[in-house]
Picture 1 (tube, rainbow, N blue to C red):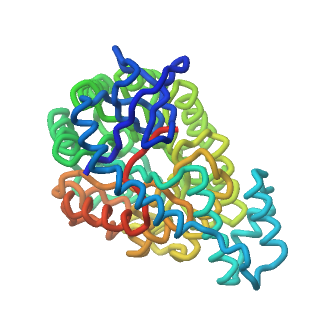
Picture 2 (cartoon, rainbow, N blue to C red):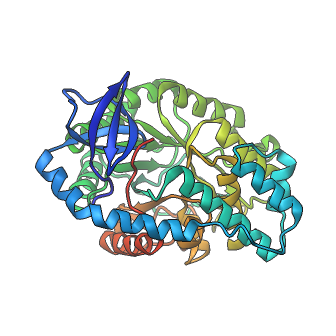
Length: 432
């Protein structure tokens, strides 16, 4: 199964190429050499990442063509709005009408939506969020792979299971050759087109070493590479970009500065946000977001989290529930409900209907086995599969009992494809 559908280059537009997918045109930033009109390419995250031979592309497209339109029809059915719905307050109807006509909701209006208690109204909010997802993003659902290269970390964040608080954790550190071997298997054997390299912060790698791995993955495998190494220097940010990284996953966790400072000793919210802005300015695709349900956080904070992520030009929103972890200061705290997470995902789609992808996080799936389906029906359109070798996966214990921890990669893929097909989603990222 390919996690990108090849498209045909129709024309060039400045630094972009216009790509045709079954009659639908999308735009992708082009850094490929010797690209011509009529060539076939793969795109991920709005980047043209790889040329593909015409005969191979046409064979894939022939296989996909009928299925693609069948999936679109299923998605349209599931995302259709019932405009005759009754038992909704005039305020809810008015707010959704405002969003559906392209207007932004104010902070207090978003807080009102997040605080709804009526089940019919909450369901209608989620349905509307899914309608907006389909309207602007069609039935594409990007499927990325994540490789957790090291669980060493120098930070003492109060909620994280791989922080310095956890003295009982066995630490691991994949070397450069092993990282590349795992990436190669993900791309060549399992057809992933986008990979996230993730580690704890200040985990023992030097910038040059990681830049070399990134360059080799980009050069030899053609995958879109995201980095997720915590806070790094601007020099490292530049070197990773020059090596070929084009995305960064860096969550700010909370927009509440006082709460951030309490949970991140020695950290500074402004410094983290400045780094995210710097990455965006350099051309990185930004994936960011927060932890939902942190002790002391309010609905007002969560709304501000969503608005901040949009302000930071998020290409992907990564919002997951706080799950207490052993051997941390917050080990006796509690998580939010799965129902509340559904509303948060819907809220994010109302905040950003047209641009950003919304990830169904593994943390949400850990909270609720049905989370992936529920999240995708509330406006989300991205999932991430764990391609870390299983001998390491259980050691990357940022919270206990992570979903998919013991599943093989083929099992994860099969489960994902079955779900996406049932929802009418195509496991691909068509560009912008």
